[in-house]
Amino acid sequence: MKPDALLQALLELADEAGLRVELAQGDEAVQSGACRVGDRIWVILDARDPVAHRVEALAGALRQHGAARLAGRWLPPAVRECLELSEW
Image (cartoon, rainbow, N blue to C red; front, top):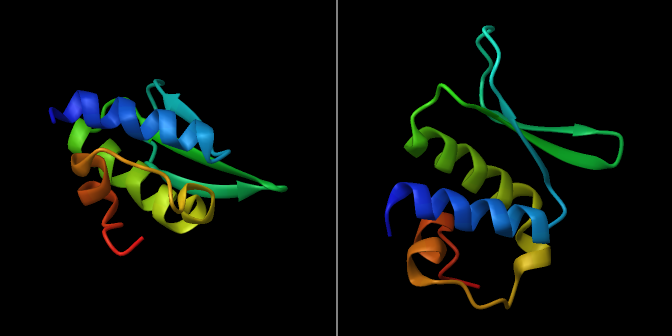
């Protein structure tokens, strides 16, 4: 699976898992990652980061904050491998 397609698949999973994803596109450097604001998990992705870095940041947020909501769901093998969820 190409990196852009993998990122798109992860964005869809994040939405299903209730994670709010925002793409930072300003001039200021932002570190891609997840944080909790109130009862919501926000994932901020820096548009200047390489796609592979955005994929890893989003996959990490899904592993940490979305795993329970995605447990038992069928995932394409490339997505499952990226999330390291083969034990699910």
